[in-house]
Amino acid sequence: MKRLIAAGIFILILSLIFHGWNFFRLKMEWEKFCNHLLIKEKNQAISVVEAALASGGDPIEALLNFLEEAQLLKAVEIKINKECLRFPEKFPEQVVPLGEVEIPPLKLRFYYTPEILTHYQHHLLWEFLLGTILSLLTGGGMVILIILYHRERIRYEREKAETERIKSINLVISAVLHEVKNALNNIQMLTYRLKRKKIEGAKILESEIQRIDRQLRELSIQLKPRLNNKLLKIDQLIEEVVEEFRESLYRDGITVVLKLNEGQLLGDQDKLKSVIRNLIKNAYEVLREDREKKLEIIGKISETNYVLQIIDSAGKLPPPEKLFKPFFTEKPGGFGLGLFLSKKFIEAHNGTLKAYKNNQNTVFEIKLPLGKISEK
Image (cartoon, rainbow, N blue to C red):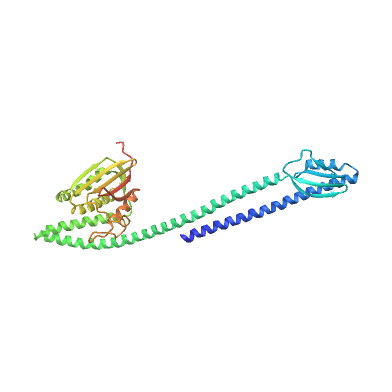
């Protein structure tokens, strides 16, 4: 990044130097051109006077007629027989002498006004300032574009690496799931035989196998990359997930406060349930060791979004920069994929998932765009 900024600044400095050199060169050329015009008009005036003297005409009248048409020469001082005449009679104030020329019996001193030259110099100066500003804007824009390009490229590379990493994770987990499901099917068949023979503990084994099967199905749902979107009543979906935990929460003495506003949105029912289930499960696991044991689940409409807050009184929150990273977990035996996948699913719904602490409480907040409300 520092090298790119240095390169951009170097290009900007070169641009300013090039622009300054062009201005200096143009100024020098302009001064040469003006001197050439002055010398040309002066020589023309001398030729007019010489021609008038040679033809026996009035050199002064001829010279005054020439000055009326001249662009730069505006006045003349004529010395003849120790007499000094100035033309025009109202001599201009800001004039510059151009040297003295002797054409017997006359001595002429021409004057020119720098007004036109000053006007063009000011014009050149404004052109220089405008060019400098444009160079600064162009160079600064180039530096900004270089920085933005570099940042975008880094972001793209990170996203690409993250996508490849997720694909690899999915492939590994899918392969493991496949093998576990095959082994679980064999165990289920064996359990069924044990149950028929009324062997003690067969029912407990069957219930545990069913629990593991549910968890495997849940993980399989999370690994599916595509969304099966349809219009959902989000408040009812949340209530269904809460009901799954109702008995466990009651058994462990956890107080549940449920406040849900009605709302509809377009989403994948299974994946949204999976996210909410994962967040409530996490809250339940930390609240079992909490003294206050209070869980609040609040759903409300905020502008064009449905905001769901899952608030627990435990107040435990890992570092935010690690919380949603894959394979980060503080649970013994955990995979560290729950929150990572939950965030991905919410983002796939054009929503956001964030976590923060508020008054010693831990808050997980989901924000999802509302769908069209049915008129039926």
